[in-house]
Length: 181
Length: 189
Image 1 (cartoon, each protein chain N blue to C red):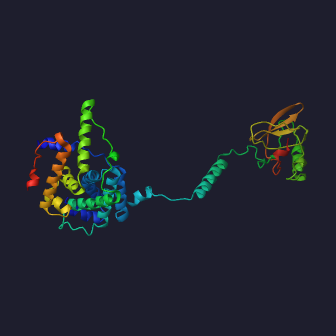
Image 2 (cartoon, rainbow over the protein chains, first blue to last red):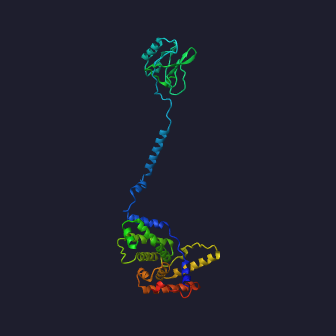
Image 3 (cartoon, rainbow over the protein chains, first blue to last red):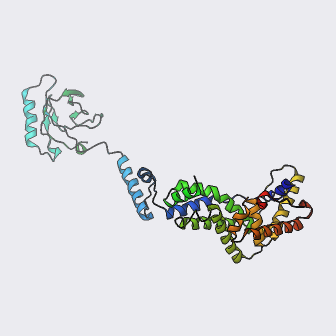
């Protein structure tokens, strides 16, 4: 009989409370007793810094701009690259006068004005331009072309270009590659 | 760990001790408030206010004067009384949600539902002073002495109230309740 009475009363069950209730009460406790705080590391890891939205947006914009400029490919044909040559040695049958002619070119030209760069090719042809090429391509000049980073020049002898090593004869000759074409 | 030790630790900012205390008493307080007020939201408010009051008064609490359980139930009773005065004494049973039954049998489900509603209505129909005594004694298993302390009355009065509450329940539940209602050993002590 006692069980029946208990069962009857127990038939009225109570719904579960909101789980947020515990957090509310715990939050109030923490507010009242802030003394026992978490460790320094835990506080550092979970720290928050409030930043105004305009400031955050400006910082984000700056970061995006900086990363864009950092990732942007740089122009390949740098105009600052120059080659210094001293001596032009013909492949065969050259005489000393060509080197003297080249030296005379060095003396007569101006660094800032490559149009003044005139030299005599080893085969007796006039040298219109001597320049350094940043890329691997060979640019055909009227008479002499320097090929890439190699220290050779293309010398027009007769009707064909021939590679000639540059023994640094044109030291001091500076040409602006953009004006060579 | 005794309640006195828990209180001491809580007053020093020991969160684990407070959580132990909360887990120990929040369920009973919530069930008591819910059965008195008939509203989940109001019961949650009572529990929250009850614990917030305890948190504010950790240092004032004297374990030698009263047990923590008695103290908390008394606080919950007072807070529920305030809710009563604010919302009116009558419970709005339409707001009490029906609980889903675990039974698959529709007939059993219907019978359980009918019994649950009958008990709920019968308890809600009791006056607050009878209801609280019945709920504390039958549902929360508190002794007559403890209930007397909670309701700030003497044990004799509590026994009388409990007896009257049961008699009213018998009338309200009719054939569903056995006759006579058994007397608990706790009641006789």
